[in-house]
Image 1 (cartoon, helix red, strand yellow):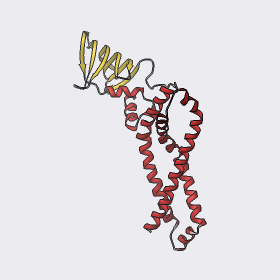
Image 2: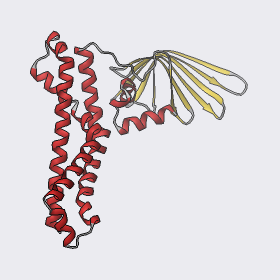
Image 3: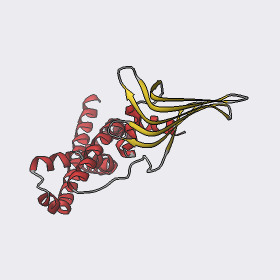
Image 4: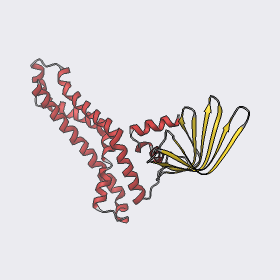
Amino acid sequence: MKHLDAYIARQFALTVVFSLLSFVALFVVLDLIDNLNDFFDNGIGFGLAVQYYLSSVPEVVLLTSPVAVLLSCLYITGRLTVSNELTAMFSAGISLQRIIFPFGAVAFALTLFNIVNSGWLLPKAMVYKHKFATTYFGKTFESLFPKGSVHILESADRILTIGRLDASTGSAERVTLETFDGSGMTMRIDAERMSFDETSDLWIFENSRKRFFLPDTTLYVHNPGTDTLKLSVTATTLQEYRLLPEEMNIVQQYRFIEQKK
């Protein structure tokens, strides 16, 4: 039975790969016809064009793999029937469930690959593809970071508000950090600028103003220099705000959702 499983699985897997390559080739031809003038106008050479279309492969594979599996199943089953191999298997007492097993094994392996593809490979490819389209085709993509202020639940009792973000460095301007105890605010920090020190793993607040809200009074402290503070977010976390959802891997998406709750 192992030889039979290997025979069917090999034929099925090769057909799936051929189907996926056919879909990729079809996509390249259609997209090349659509963008050929842009390639010539922007002086895009053969090497850059190859890199651009290689970055499109994970997306095409993810979208077309269900159809490729379906067509491959129909093709292999039909070929086994025409060559009377399927009839011989049934005559030998092999059940339908046993014949289906190698199909399921290959499909399961492709499913595992697509999980890795959609979770990690595709996001990296989309980052390159969008950067290429922005640089050479003049396309623009809307970031998740809004033009106005954004509020981040930094911890269970602290809210970080950022007025302007420099996505290239992860630094921020017009920063407010509010600390709560229940429904009441206990402290508020306003700073002109906030940057991350990777050596100490601390945030540096420049020209900060602190307000401590006590039961009977409010204390005010102004520091024209710098203050350091430990936050749960890092510069890398803030830099991820410039990414589109399809450019984030699973870990980045989970972290982004948790911080937006």
